Length: 407
Image 1 (cartoon, rainbow, N blue to C red):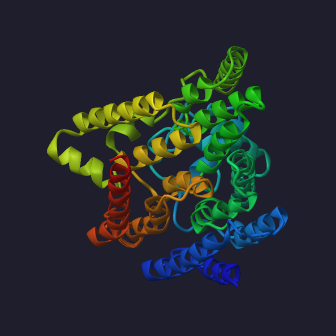
Image 2: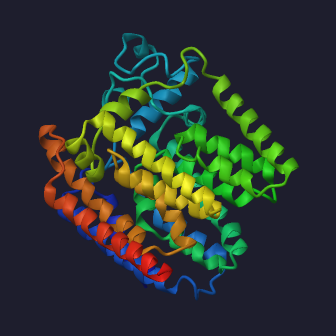
């Protein structure tokens, strides 16, 4: 019954090309409430895995055959794919460059920040090229993304079994409304990087060479998994360490070899220095000190976290969650689809503040109505408070609880 209600709520939301904030909050809130109900029964489910995947596909289908409503990133993906189909390095020209007109498609006028060259790394570009070969359409891209989306769940199954947990807990990912909206709906490239990261975590040890390739693919899709490398190496034998290093290095070289002139960095530096949105901790630090000093402070804090996790010899899965959570909490820019990186870990562990954030992050979309009508990018304070207050409160309670247990 809960799956049916979630399906109805998400299908209703998918019908809007520019959903009013009230519609978005009601529909997503209803779907997320159903998800929480399903989460309570996930451990006890005796349903075959194929039925869980079939239901997950059903939840995604209405979104696959609509346009995009909450983000315009997909137009850049299609444009980069067309560039490669024309034999052009997508890092060479920004969409606004006159030279890009030779391969521009109908999506050209919809690309955000057209004056900037692409930011997306080589493995993501490989998938953009594949989408272009399939027709360079919204549907062709969504098919690729949903396959990676379901691949995340597939990678979680061996991780669950390795931890002695029931495989049915994969429902904690499959039925979450955030990946449904952001991957099947908005087609975000994060699904590729998350899937390959989860596969690297699942394959290390039993299939070390494949784990190295998967980690390289994740890094070459969105960089975030790079610090996991040493943690994956740590508990391997000497021979397996060599295999992982060689496989990962060779795969990275292969991915990057296609883009050498110019180097495949694009607008990454501009993005890191100047873009801000929905990051209250970073905004607060930048107000107390300079933005550059805030970035240094954040970087050193993350380095200290990684050092502490290394000293304590934490499991790579826990390292991945804590690293991603820390990066997101400290980041100056947190779009709702960034929080999809946390969702797979809900199948493996239940941190209340993580669960809460995957629900409240939808308040960040309150920025859109004013953008659609007046091109003003401003997130209302009420939305920021409603998004982060439960997250900070539950995170603080978790920290205090951990301190008491140690005492």
